[in-house]
Image (cartoon, rainbow, N blue to C red; front, side, top):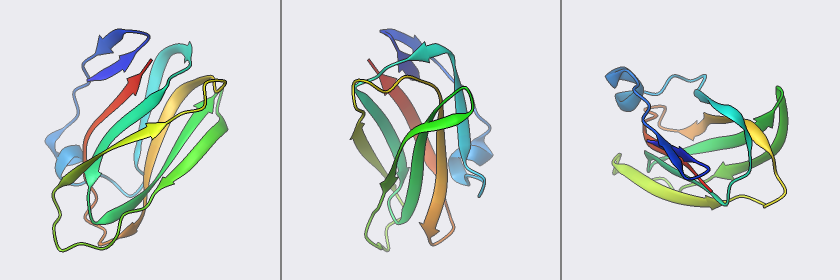
Length: 111
């Protein structure tokens, strides 16, 4: 489920995306430019990820999701605060390190 502006969007992805995120990552295009307070994402807990917000194809804000190495490959949820003045129309999540068995459980854009 992706939520934006108080509206929830259910997104269907192939099971292969859930079990093995591609090295190129995942891109989610929103229906219109918006702001958000939080990006909530669930990812494999023993990998690192790069999260970027884009507007008209240009990066407007980015951060890293760094997690310590773990023998546990279950999913871990992160609430990432987004500055209130950032306007974006695309969310991009890309693996950036770890055991290379990347996984995405969900990604939510919270108003």
